[in-house]
Image 1 (cartoon, rainbow, N blue to C red):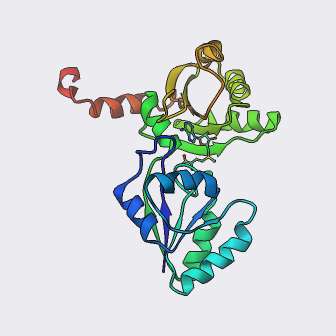
Image 2 (spheres, rainbow, N blue to C red; image 1 turned 90 degrees about the vertical axis):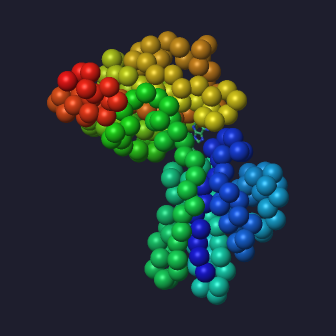
Length: 245
Ligand code: SAM
């Protein structure tokens, strides 16, 4: 009678918790986006639980079915192809319906591409804004970036390899000096996290940073007005703080 939201690896099969493996073995059903993708994980960890697909195109019908199963006593784990369900992945509507039905929801935390990129990037992790995928239409993308890039927070975006160059060019149009981190193939064999002003990053694209694989973009915040505050915040967290004061 519990819906478990289970984090799974974003590329490296070892990045899964003991609890996640136990829960995936114990539940009655694993609801997943693509049974072939999740099948690789379950095969690796000898998990024999039956799977049902739950994705963008069948989620309305499946939400009803899964809620009914939970109400009659089943335990269900929801996973996505990679990382955390609900984070730019299906699951939000299911959580609402399950909570409304008075059934327990628990999260089994795990890896996430946005936070992995932010942590590695060297850009500020004190305050950040995650906004998933940008609109595809050029004018909408530009307008959204123009608004987001005024924020004094690191901005984290997901992007496909086919649009990453175009998105970096749009960021350059808004502010060519802005530092940006490009995280590619995180936790995988060819992982790269390159942080540089966006114009330099664009020069490295294609030969030094191949446009293949999965990408996260992190944009430095606009700190002018809050610069002093940021400086003090970082200084106070510096272990050699006495030396500077
Ligand atoms: N739910 C996932 C999470 O928690 O990170 C994100 C799913 S979203 C549909 C897929 C996007 O996440 C990809 O297009 C890419 O932008 C990003 N992503 C996922 N895995 C990644 C990886 N190993 N390296 C870089 N980006 C990744």
